[in-house]
Image (cartoon, rainbow, N blue to C red):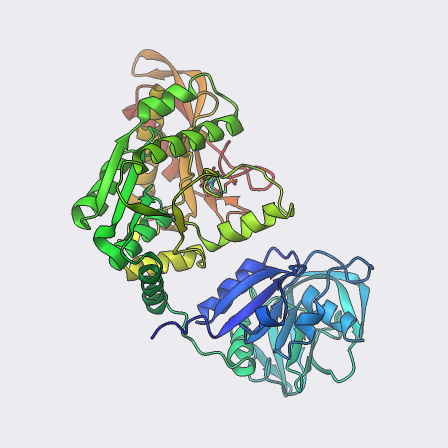
Length: 525
Ligand code: XMP
């Protein structure tokens, strides 16, 4: 009944744009399944393309004016499917189909007002301004090159003063190009432009909804697993929690969760997880207290990458040992989500630089006997959250800030000690509590406290205090690839600082991290 939610699918061909995932998400927000593939993926052949009803070519950082420029494959151009080229995608269409592209004197970056030209299925009927009988759209541009000549058979659909060919279309072949970015919210009517493409041109419906995704996932899990038993490493993070809720609904008692307390969790986290999933949802959870083991292995280790490896390997060791005691388990469930899949594919082809080794991607023993079950593999984070709500998980749980796999291990700079972790837990809990009280928690994307292993002099009452320093970090970001420090008021920061110093004797000073990413990263290690 629900097996058709992938039928109306759109393929996003990625030319290296930072916005490719955003295009895929926007299409899905319209209720249409989308998938991303790299422009040079050699699996893209007619059979692969037959799963799709349309193709979007993304933007990209390259120029089509050199010989080695990325291009749309013959399979894509000859599939007979509707195509929408965005920015670089439009330029490569122009070049490959017989038009021309030239470097522009003016590099446009930011808002532009485009004039909609003629009648076509993509842009007609959408306007932000109507003046002198003409329609205009406020859009976001970001390009150096521009199309200087349209291929034969194409009509002009949009123009600006500095970019006379800002949109073109061959309606007979259902091929469209736009120089602006409809996927970013700065393009006010961007969602409608994409909707015109996926519905009006490609003829897609809108079956990709949280309720349908859940129903489809449940059916698939039951099909895959049958009467087998499944093990899940539950961390309390959004992805593993939604996986647990989904599996609970699909296979109930055939699921056993393993929750490893590594001593690097936030305040009261273990209790909350056990209460929610064990007591409230009735799941079978094995709680393993491994604080001593983890902290023992981390003794004397201060290099960030080394710490990540120790924590990752110890987790696998503890988890495997516990899993081996669960009878008849043939499946290991993981909360892998679509960006993890894209990221691992990119690092496998050497296209992504490893800045930090995020150990939740990969890291499984090579001789693992269990089969892998990844029910969130197709979903973006915002979709995981929506299906979490659909499954009845509380809003505050589903919209919790991300917490890194190595936990407080990467928020205690240098060597990790229990004393430091205890102090950090208390300070972080105060910061988060104050954010919630001030109704700021959901307005920032991620907030936490970092422990600095230095000591500083303070005076509390009449006494001298020589104690540790923490730093507050709060960021705003859309995709966690870039971020800026959140602008919290001085009054608010004063309150947090004074509570931390007054309530925690081991901390004498509170600082604020205002670095942007890049060049800093969000976490300190
Ligand atoms: P950075 O510090 O790289 O962080 O700017 C970007 C986002 O990723 C999270 N992060 C991690 N998540 N394992 C994880 O599961 C890790 O090792 C890890 N390191 C960073 C970080 O919290 C932020 O949301």
